[in-house]
Image 1: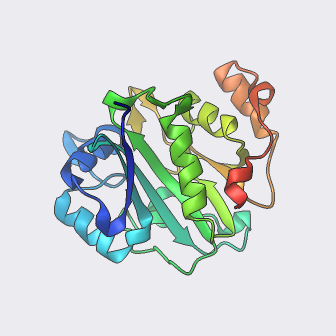
Image 2: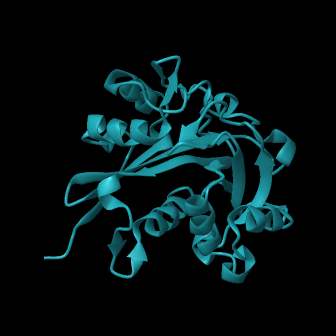
Amino acid sequence: MPDVLTYRFGHDITNRQQLIDIDQAYWKLIVNGSIDFRYTIKNSEEFDRMIERSPHGFAAVYVNEKPALLLKAMMYVTGGLNMNIPQTSDKLTGNGTWETFNPEGDTVTFVTCTASPAFFGYRIGDVRLTDDVIRKACKEYSDKRFKTTYSPVNIHATITHTRNGALPVTLLPKARPGLVVDDIPSEDVLIWGYDWPTFDESLFDYLNDLFRKDLKKDLRAYSPHCFV
């Protein structure tokens, strides 16, 4: 029997504690020996409040009903201007509360997309799970004129977004102060644009030097599934 892939949004999200565990494993901070939840979800009660406040800001993916991935999204108004992109994660998300969520906004930003380690490298046929999520998210939020990400500057996020046709918009130094992932400082954020009026292709030079990889060589044509 083939695996069954299920997407659930907002109030329909189940197995919430398991999804919180997936999110915390990547995004929690340890500050002076204590856990800091500024970039992740603190507990199930907080998650319930966040979903109640902004149900269109969360999507979960299940494989055979097992939680596999959590996508967190923010909606707000930018007018397609770089100057209106929040310069820090705290400003974007209201210190992680999602109180800044504006369903009437013209912009959706995919804040984090976090998979369970059990599904790293998972594919649906020939399609990677993360690629399927990006395509599904672009369609789900097709009513938003502008679509961006708030991605850590790492090789995995970079290859994923270039593979799906995104272009770099701007680099935000220390947008997530203090964040360390796998012993690697991860404070900087790169805004990738799936539907954004301007891009900074010179950032490819920065990324090529950082990762010693010719990313432009792998860049596909702009993804048509993001404009349906």
